[in-house]
Length: 332
Ligand code: AMP
Ligand code: MG
Image (cartoon, rainbow, N blue to C red):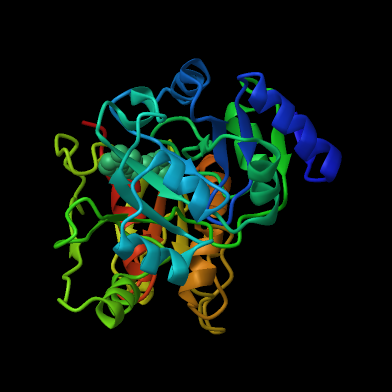
């Protein structure tokens, strides 16, 4: 059931979570499927409902840095990053304490933590006295949801509540930074917080310059760094084909395919029913915001193929392209 995000419904969802239920919730990144992170059987439900393998660990969400420190190691490096980026779309991997059950972390001694900024999510975190484990609220490997209606279409029958607070403002998942080795912070997943921003904050504060390495870009599922970085992810059921950035003029249109560009085509382009775009002028944060809802919409229009233009490799374009490559990857 979709519930508008007001005080009564937030309270209702807090009661469900305390009773070990799972609830879909808004966040500034994408909609999440939340459970009490300290309740093993509640967390198990997340995996079951999503069809997510148990080896793919979950991110835990907290209301404050003090709350984080009760469940995970907070290093001075992490404090600096928290000051700069929290609440916000940065997830940090650090050592866990015993209060986090193994099912959350796929048995790893580390845990991924984040303090979100979305007001309804924060109210919910304040209404419970435990962290919320929450992956994206989609069936495993399908398109991530950036709206409550997207969640309803896929998981609506399987969960007791979807807290609806409108579309996610960012629209793609958080950046994941691995801080397990203090000498080598590594970006495990590209996202809204850019490597150069992380580098700048760490360099400003830390005497020894620390490199940010993009580990696991191609998503080797065997790696122990970020075990969930699957090759195929965020994928529509319709075949997805990538188009080089800026090559829309070379398209030979086929009526059975949908074409999705980064920005509105030039005025002299003929009108076509099967031509869509993600922003007016190529603004990458807007492309990110619209990406997943547009993909899910096109997935239901009956096209044989979706052809999507890549972003330039700059700013959040790198994170979007990473999603596009995985969405277009064939199942193994
Ligand atoms: P999501 O798919 O948005 O739930 O993101 C979770 C991802 O975060 C996982 O697939 C891992 O790549 C990463 N992650 C979560 N927990 C850990 C952890 N304890 N150690 C390393 N990576 C983690
Ligand atoms: Mg996900």
